[in-house]
Amino acid sequence: MADYILAIDQGTTGTTALIIDAELAVVGKANVEFPQHFPKPGWVEHDLGDVWNSVCKAVGKVLQQAKVNPGAIRAIGITNQRETTCLWHRDHEATPVGRAIVWQDRRTAADCAQLKMRKGIESSVKKKTGLLLDPYFSGTKLAWMLQHYPKARSLAQSGKIAFGTIESFLVYKMSGKHVTEPTNASRTLLMNLSKCQWDDDLLKLFKIPKAILPEIYPSAVEYGKTRGMAFLPDGIPIAGLVGDQQAALFGQACFKPGMAKATYGTGAFVLANVGPKPVFSKHKLLTSVAWQLGDKPTYCIEGSAFIAGAAVQWLRDQLKIIKSSGEIESLAREVESSEGVLFVPALSGMGAPHWLPSATGLITGVTRGTTRAHIARATLEGIAFQIRELLEAMGKDLKKRIRPLKVDGGASMNDLLMQFQSDLLGVDVVRAQVAETTALGSALMAGLAIGMWSGLGEIEKKWKPDKRFEPNMSSADRKTKIARWDRAMEAVELLSKP
Image: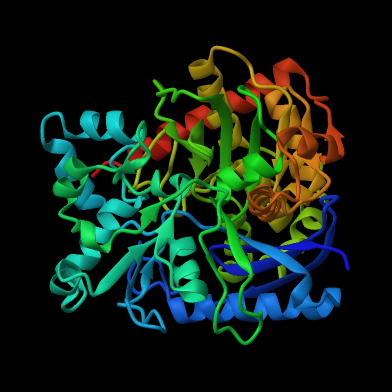
């Protein structure tokens, strides 16, 4: 009987379950979406019951689709939306304490601004964590929950509730173990980056009781075994945990310093491997743990664009320009260019390198001749412009140009977007054969933990590209387009001021 790894990719809008064999081939894939909640402007929440149900359904569907006996699953890898913040009761059902606050949520912007006003606080936080004081991260979200959810503070102090990011919640539900690992912990504002342990000074700053925190383990170990689930037998090791963007870096086999990938999902994320020592950005990028194998962490530098695929969803759901996300490429190809229409998709503020939590979207260059096809094309181009900014900042920090760029995620299947990305960067863009590299990364972690693969060298040999996009835009045209984007960004920055 063949051996398989089950990968659970718990994302912002749904859960994807993959079954992967020893040759890195995907033998089954299933996705289940779940509702988003927007109770106030700038607030984004998830019902953890909905999240868990999506996991159960996705795993059930993929086992049925692939016709794989659950007994052939040797291990489970989990990857997840990272900064999304969860609180639950320490009971068998892991009953949620209110809704989870999603990484996109901006409700703690004022709290971050107040902390920044205190002399030396932000520089101290950045030195310890590699992060900035921004509502993006879990620390201020958790502090808000403890203050506003009924009895949360007293329950936390007595150790009756648990905190975790999504992977921690899922492992608790599946095995009863309260654990995490450095790639997720490094996104909380609570972990000391060099020690890969919770930091007492940071816990004091955010008023977080240590009793609610999970224990931090490396990224590829046995965290616990399944028990009491209808869709999986007891005793399967949960052996790989890794945050989604670091999982994609690992799934792209970016094992050497200087190798980089971009993932196009709800948001877009560029990560570069920087090796065994953290590199602290001078251009407002973030430093995190890429993964930890054994006692040796590997670090990465990261830039995030909060809105990528979410901009396409906005065209679909709010503007009704398209009926499905898959229609956008064919619509955009109805015109030769955007005809001067430019869209800055700052629909949830802007991340690196600007860090403007109050920024809003901007569409410029609209005329009487503008059609929905021009808007569609400008939307795709707006995603690519954000990636270019991130790679430009990253190149300055690493003192070298990053080439080629490996790409993955749902929108990486859009050939028009990938070609424009290559044109705008002036470097080759290489798409992975396995588009679901986030899930693949977690599967690889789990497989390493149980010995399915001997090491990184064997994985590197098995990794295969799908398609390479080469730049064909003139240097003059590229400069003109970038200059227009820069002027639009100046307007966004100006309009974001009170």
